[in-house]
Length: 248
Image (cartoon, rainbow, N blue to C red):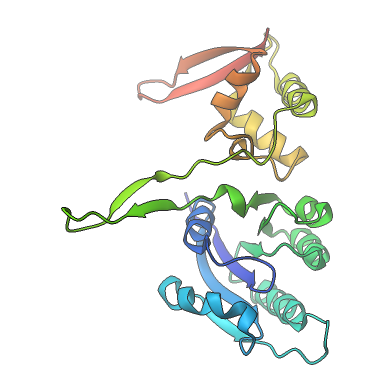
């Protein structure tokens, strides 16, 4: 299966640099990042933290001076580049990394042109930008592995990724979203394929991710709400199991 080519465009003024490695790993799940650019006025101290991670992650910095106080000219430079890349027809999708609602119209325009748009930003990101993307991922759920130096070992010890308090709690609205989506997709006997369910929910709620609720995958989240029967079915001669669920 052909992987999508992605353009990664980062607004350095509106996202922290701490989780850039995890962010790029997440982007790689959706395709191959063939273009990686980051926009800022690099003469400012506020973006100095980014400078140390650009080279090791092969991200090209784009200098954009702030011509007017209080205005973010980096936004304009990113938007212009995005449109140039769109018309070059060299990519299949875009990853816009920002917590700024100024990119809402850009995301809508790219999707109108048939592009896939993945958004990355903090929990504070305004809803219009989140909704404008095909999928939006909160960078707070991208936790780095903890590196602990060891006096006896020759290399640092990697511990599992740090778990923290979930961004969201499972509430009645989420349960209703899952139940109604499963019912919409159910076959005549009432069973719904789990893989189809995840994609369908994402179309309704672009920032849906089980990790927002403290679960690594959709199935453990489904089991926790205790609303469905679960059926694991063999997929032919392979060892792969297909998961189906049905409202109790």
